[in-house]
Each structure stands twice: as C-alpha cells, then as structure tokens.
Length: 173
Image (cartoon, rainbow, N blue to C red; front, side, top):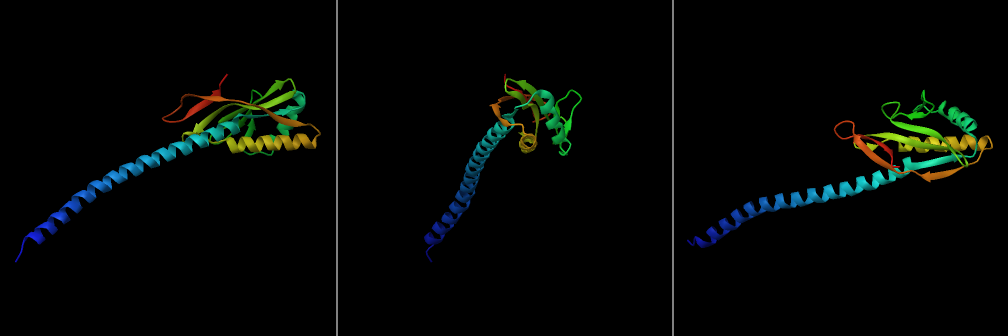
C-alpha cells in the first residue's frame, strides 16, 4: 500500500484548514474596514444635508410684530414647538430647547432662523421639525397676504461635548 497519496491528501486538508481560518479572518477585517468607511461617508453626507436644512432661514416681509403674530399662530398648532420666555422658539426632540429659533430684524422684514441646536445619538435630530415650521409659517403668511422668501444659508460649528458623544451646535460667525 502506497502511503504517499494519503500523506499528501492529509497535508492538503491541514493546509486548507489553517489557510481557510486565516483567509476568513483577513476577509472579515477587510469587510469591516470597508463597512466602516461606507458608514462614515454616509454619516458625513447625512450631516451635511441636515446642516443645510437647519441653516435655511426664512424672510417674512413684514415688521417684527406682525411676523411674531404669524409665528405665534403657527406654534399654537405645533406640538413640538413652544414659545420661550425670551421670545424665541424652542423645538423639542427630547428637551424643549433642543433647537432654538429666533426672529431677527432684517432689511427686508423679519428673518426666522435657527440660532443653536443640540444633537442626539451623534446627529442633529430636529431638521424635519424646522422644515415643517418654516413651511407652516410661509403658508400662514401667504394666507394673510404677507410674502416670504428663503433667506441666507447659515453655517454652524459644533461646540464642546455635552455628554459622551453629543454637542450643541452654534452659528459659525
């Protein structure tokens, strides 16, 4: 009986077992690295889009008292938006001041803009609520015969961490 073919077959099986384990761990590391890179790119794109949404301002072509009256009538129907003691608005994701919105005098009337916002889970969460608020203000203003237009895009910078991974963003002046 010839032993050499069985010996070669045994060595081949042993090589496949050892090589397969190493190959599987290498492929797994490469896949995890590629996944982390894709996740990072997606998060960066999503953050840029969200910052653009939060940075969009609205010009109400009316003096501040009339613009405030329009905004106040809108906030009465918005569960997540409340008037604050200082005259600004708070948009709630978790807390009533997660996003602070202010009415600012502008050469064309009054500008409605986000002053500051907090992120949760490492990402700003109130962009959709802000977009809904702007749309509602524009709608009510239109019903009252007041024109509106998009204002300048405001840029923000991330402030210091408030907890292990979330921060408050402020205007980048």
